[in-house]
Amino acid sequence: MHVLLILKTANGGLWTLPHIEELRTRGHRVTVVLPPGPGRLRTTLDSLGVPVLESAFSFSFRPGPRMLAGLWRLRRQIAAAAPDALHYHLYASALAARLCSIGLRVPRIHMVAGPLYLDSLIIRTAERALARLDHVTVAGSEHTALRYRALGLPAERTPPIPYGVDVSRFTPPDRRRRTESRAALGIAADAFVAVMVAYAYAPKRSVHRGRGIKGHDVLLEAWQGFSTRHPGARLLIVGGGFDAAGEAYRQELIARFRLAGNHTVVWLSSVSDVRRMYDAADVSVSPSLSENHGAAVEASAMGIPCIVSDAGALPETVDPHCGWVVPPGDPDALLAALDKAHRAFLAGELPARGARARERMVRRFDRRVLAAALADVIEHVVLLRRTQAARRPGFIAGAARVWCRGRPTIEASAGGPVAGGAGVDEDCVKSLRQ
Image (tube, rainbow, N blue to C red):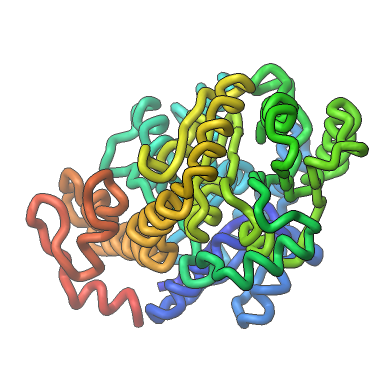
């Protein structure tokens, strides 16, 4: 089959690469529609030999003749590509793909990267109607699946499939790696080190009352009290401003919390390999106000216990044996969690927590298994459209029976059993891969 993937960015979206690789391994063709211009994703796709089309639409939804003309041109691109499935991530991509494909009789598979846009009442109200244009809405987390089901979509059309983490690349450090990373950062070998990995996003008035979405301010306020009691501890923040407004916000935080003269905080705007930062850490902190799984999956895969806020899908990354959950936007609660992590550090209990965090990632967030689950969903959606099969309750959910609490990661593959004991015609599935 031919899958047309639409993304609004040529720079981000690298998390789609495992999905593309899995589909191509199965013998399917994948073409990617990106905005014109260079970017990390575009460069990687070119190196892999993945065909790329430059989008005729700018993904700007400012009403007017230019927007309508761009949408019409994108519709013609989609029709000319004649895909068997239309697949898209990120909300602007979803809006464009849905509107441009109405009447084209091509299955639409939306994969939701994060729930932030659903925090807007206006968008959430619109999604109650627009999401019905998706044949399947693949939720990047259980949290997002539940939110779409609250908007009226049935469970069989909202399977939760996380983006996951490369557990073969993000691995726990040995003593040498840990020593070298701390030495390079000028951090003592016996210091307690917390790390936060996140871009700084400028506050938006439309969501969360204009506060920075990643919670940098929450952590920095909590750290003021923590570092007073533990002056030998270090906070390592990794991530510059996402854009010019984000960088301006980062600089404002640096000034507000007087970080220029604070030896307990190191804030790096960019690094060549974020794994070296995790190598130096004892605990990872994700204090976001809204998030999918975020940096917690990378940190956990490297054997680092995590403190996460009870926001979005972050609590799905930890359990009481490997991490801590705190209310979002609460510096006092975050300070208390840092104190607990520090006590566990002094008692020598963090390595055991880290080992359990790593085991959780391998069992539930291995991106290779999750990419296969997504490919299963796409194949089954196309199969249903081709054969005009009767709608069976749980069919799509069974095909991607993935990552449910207390169950193995995946229990069915293309051609295998699905929910309700229904079977998939193996010959039909083979034809999709030809």
